[in-house]
Image (tube, rainbow, N blue to C red; front, side, top):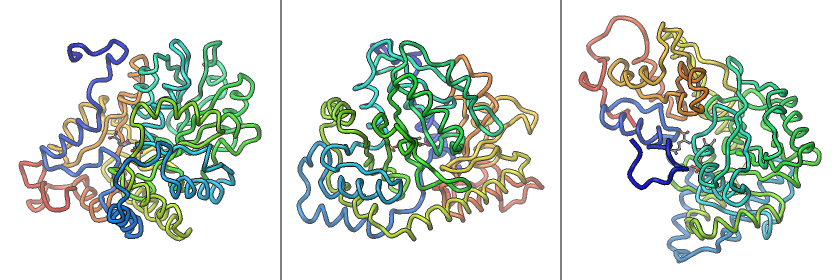
Length: 406
Ligand code: PMP
Ligand code: GLN
């Protein structure tokens, strides 16, 4: 049932699956492979810079657009990694996580009745942000097993009312990294129909098997693209909620208009920490990618051994499995039983699908691998088939809530 008084445009959004499943993990002591957050701390340079900023008295409202050192660091990072030149004075806006950047972009760009085209499955806040703006979403399926989209389906989704393409690569939940042909198809549609592209690149440093190339770098695209990222994934500090959005000054100014009334400004001292992080040498970013790739491979092996061979995922934080391989058909029921059955928690991917496409999303389950190798190893033991050994246990009632469960 909807909460009393909830405005109709938010009906159906309930409680996020991440809150629900993290609560399930806490309650049962199961290993949380649901919500995508790392279980290690940010690099010392990043933490120290934020602590220093607090000690140095950066404790009052920062500028609404973000502190100058962070805006400059974002501009340098954009040039260094993407070859995209942005002016830290006009083309960069610091936000409270990528989540606020997405919401502010939708609130600023979308008129009631305008359509926003996105790929499905989609990160859950996209649908809510479009709904809060009074817009309508239209989805283009990413088709399993390799999660590609059909360029004709993208073309067919465009109408007179389409205003924005909201894309995400590396992708949550599937791990898909768009390839060159897909990027070109998106750019062609955006240029032909004069659309704004909002690209969510929070996993920009986590493309393992294929390079991540921002859509903003394609011919003609920089002037119509808003690029979103966040410090949370890159520096293992999802709780800091420091994100940003970059693009041409006129589009950024539009986004700033709503951002200033959502939060006005975002966590000042933490911005200094992220500024320090963005300036770390290449070795940091390469190491992050190598580590996460090894964690992906370890979790993939564990899932394979459990009879749940994951679908291909070239980047991001997550693997997807299909419960039909175990003779089941409902990913949500599977996830609700997971703590008891295996002592782990995962996310039913159906929540990333429209109601109309629920049947397609129903069998899929998303597993986070952004966890310490020892936690993944422990999850692998729990998932492994074979006789129950007394030291291993099945379910919280049998002793899962040990020190490793994070
Ligand atoms: N976009 C995607 C694709 C994400 O996966 C996430 C968080 N996992 C976000 C946005 C939100 O990022 P933030 O925590 O910086 O708000
Ligand atoms: N983005 C993270 C995930 O996909 C969770 C973020 C959240 O809890 N809203 O798991």
